[in-house]
Image (tube, rainbow, N blue to C red; front, side, top):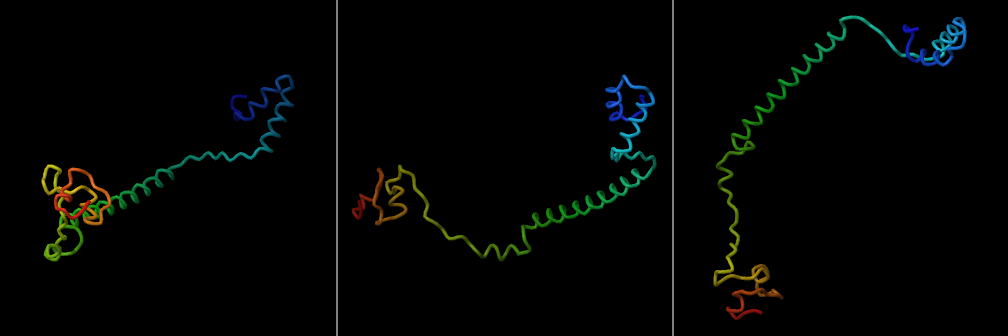
Length: 134
């Protein structure tokens, strides 16, 4: 009985009070009617498959390492294939620098942004001192 599959043993143990011949018949019917997809194989084919997979992974890894090296070189050269001289010719426009509130010419955020169109003001704002606004 220990050589039987566990699914058949579970059914047979419930029917302990029957004869050995009837238990064998029940076990045969269970085997005939159950769809068992268990396959037992012995061989070296899984090792060959895993060796092929390892070779493919090694090839992919070397390609990725080459791509990473190419990207590093591109970053070290300064990004895209543009030359540095063409980038240095373009300069950013200078924007107004914010002053601190300790500065006598400091403007509040409203006058700093909207100038004479500002509808609000925060102290200490130098806009009033200029005599042109709120």
